[in-house]
Amino acid sequence: MPDGRGSSGRSADPIIPPSPPARRLGRRGWRDTRLLFGVLLVLVSVVIGARLFATADRTAAWVAAKANLPAGHVVTAADLVTVRAQLDDDTAARYYPGRRSKEVIGGTLARPVGKGELLSGADFAGPDAGATRIVPVVVKAGRVPPLTPGDHVDVYVYQPSGAVDGTDASGGSGTSGGAASPSDVGSPAAGGAGAEVLVLHDVEFLGEQRIATGDRSLTLRVSVDAAIRAVAASQSERVDVVKLQRDGRGQVGDAGPTAAQGYGR
Figure: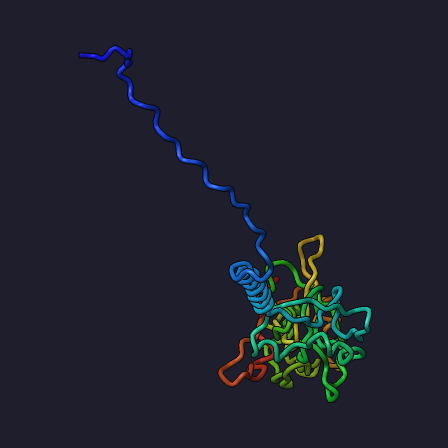
């Protein structure tokens, strides 16, 4: 039976342990191992990244034309600019690096050089190069094949009262410009049909300009004695241009026949 002291039957309140004393977090010092390792890792990453970036940029400075320069132009310092490009070893051996820009000043261009085009030794006339002439020859549309500066061509002219036979043109290579002379012309063609006559053989093509009529003005490099024939050809009624193809030894062969019976315009 319950006693008379009026017990409520509830258990005694639980005992709560005292809180542990608080500890302050200490500030990490510069000598902390993990902090030093992190700083070292960042520095190593920066150095490696910079090295990789420097290695990736393998471009170098090269001498280039500041503007379009014609064949026969004497190069001055104002004509030059340096551009950066990445070239393989074989290609780089042909061009002038930026540190050698003074070497090209005073040189005479053997061919036209476009704006921004790198300059090479092949672009300049050598000390033993003979005198030449730069002559424009007007050709009607459709009478000239696709040409690239540096190609070599033969130039034929249609002569209404020309000859059907003649001797070979004096052979020439490079800029010799050998061709049939007036003494090569024989008897007139039968029926007055005219003749195709070779007037320039193996001359260098330097460039072209389109005329408003659709015709083209071809710039050719010829020898001194062939310049008059080039001018005369430009005044003729019809000019035909043939691109020369070199054989396995790099030769274009002789001129071949210098005249043949024509078939009208």
